[in-house]
Image 1: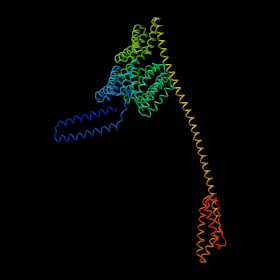
Image 2: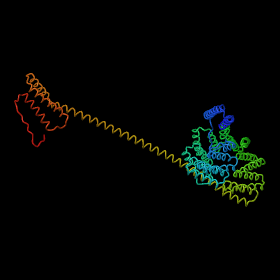
Image 3: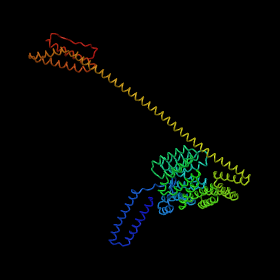
Image 4: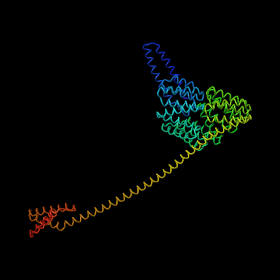
Length: 610
């Protein structure tokens, strides 16, 4: 059971009963008992409400919301949407209800779809909600696209684009440009459809709207399929599939499989396309997606027609019609009636084919689907022409021509001119046949030129992108190689610096060691062991003789001399005064040892500063 139905059941079945009982308590009066009972019941109501919220959030799994601008499953019920509109309080919720109703009515009645889109535009303008206003303009444009009212569609698409661009509604811009690309594909031969859908892709990425991004990929894949660019279509389908797997939304897979089936069919693999759709039908039926189920059944029927298996094609077409008609999916129902009529036409059952085409025509006329109405008139003209009923054929062909001229669509003009040429030729009216043959040739050339140029530009753009990717990869490899070389060079340079540093440090250590050794050697040379030994013997002798004055004098001079030796040994250069002190202390010690047997005099040149 869908989440929304369970939520409504929980709300109306339980809470409405509580509210009724609550009003009953209030009617009892203001006595103490009723007040206490009312208070306790209010607490019970809060408890029920909390339990309900927890149940809905954690036990049940809600279905993902649908986006009226893109991938839409058509699972809502019109009556439910109208009730939600009547219950809506805020302008935003009302606008969203209008948009959902407009989207649903696009497959039921174009007139109603247009009216709800208008209501959304007016309310979003007065409520100053620019993003929703842009979406409303977009839906209005799509209503006109159903009928191929090109000028009006362009007007509303431009309004939607300007509104979304003004307020930087990136997601809306993506959907608008994707829709514009679909139009440009068949109306413009400059290949701008590819630029538009590429811009849409960038806007979806900016908005982080991944469902919109899938919509853009699938749309571009469909356009590539129509241009017979199958490799490019496969690439976009792979991108969409990768993104759908990340989002883990099974509903997105439905749109993907339908596009996969289209690609297989375009490649001539009709049986594989049928198998792919049938493989996924149980999931579609499980979610009760009736519109998409009907679309899948219709696709299967078309594939069987291409295989020439008309009985199976009829079986699936009727099954699809029986599912969508009770739900008033009038556009799909009329398409299925036309499909069934075409099968009967192929099997030469003209009476049934004419009757079914009239049913489809009436359905399309009363629900304001002008382009589809053109198809019905065209099919009737072709059928009556096959039966050689020229007057009836020309009548319905004239009705088709009026629609083609009114909406100025080159595809419908080409089809009308071609059938006129064939019927007039069949009737022997060769002058008229030649006139329409020339018109048909002109329209066909214009149409083929648009398609061919767009295909060429799309292929060229794809090749340019491929070349850019290859060039980017080449540049990336070059940059990577340069980085590797730079890192290698930097590593070798660093290694050389480290080795040089170690060598210099080793050399300095060696010099320092040699210096210390020289200092020790110099110190040993300065402090002659014999001199030290003799000085100490002399001090000892004076102590034994109790000549303390000489012993003390000798010891003072000796200690002063040793101190000077030690301090001067750590210096590369010493003052002349220190050198003279060393000589003086040395001579005084010797003079004391030898009992003043010699005299000395130290002379210093006046030019020297001691």
